[in-house]
Image (cartoon, rainbow, N blue to C red; front, top):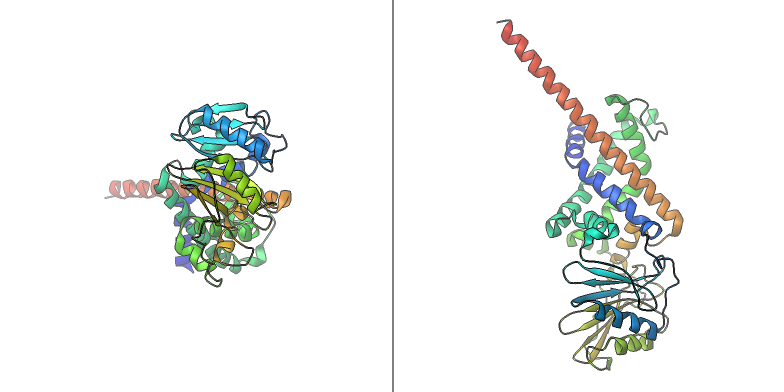
Length: 351
């Protein structure tokens, strides 16, 4: 038990700041639709093919290097055009540019997203974030084991009574056990989105998704976004248009069926050389259907206001736990080091 306590404290002291950054940035992103602050963000999104085709035309005419258009949806009434190099624009339903930028640093929701997912460090940052998720899962499990010994002293406390080490430890223990289920879910889903072995371990009990057909479902004019949108409406008449992605030789339309949780959907229409193929779930519970629920659960894109409030409480609690842990631990280490140095000096003088 002493070894577990030692490991829990030292790993927490080292990774605490990373967890604080992830907690605060994630909590802010939960509410980005409330503070994004661009005119038209609260407009009702258009869903007809002609209107969306006009938006795509406006995005292509606005700047070269268009990589994707994310269509307006629940909570965001503007369409988001992203360009190579980090530039982008918000476009309203009539095709007018409501806001534009050249780098992600000009839009707080964009750099916060990059901070939360990549620590502003690309693939390396993503690995660190995934490792922090696994470490966080260790904190939840080890913390629950440590708490069990002192469960009779449990008290509901959001803030330590005093900023002393003993009071902070008690608050850390009691608040930690209260938010443990939420944090476990956040850490597990976050790690699963980064590391395939974690994702495979969670989805192992479920069957594989049936292979997508290689037979083209239709032929359209190549590189024609409007034609692909019309084809998507014919194949999935009740699905929501979510994103149109551009590459050098193909177009990909993402749609969201009613049973899908992921905001941008997992129903794909891909056009290459005029041939359109479909890759979409059918609602059965398979590995892909389970794994696509990780992101919406993690980001509060399902569950409504109540789940977002629960995640907010979990995120703010994690930030508090991490900040107080790092501050109190290293403050105690500094005092210990100062005392040891004083003892050494006194010992030298006594010789």
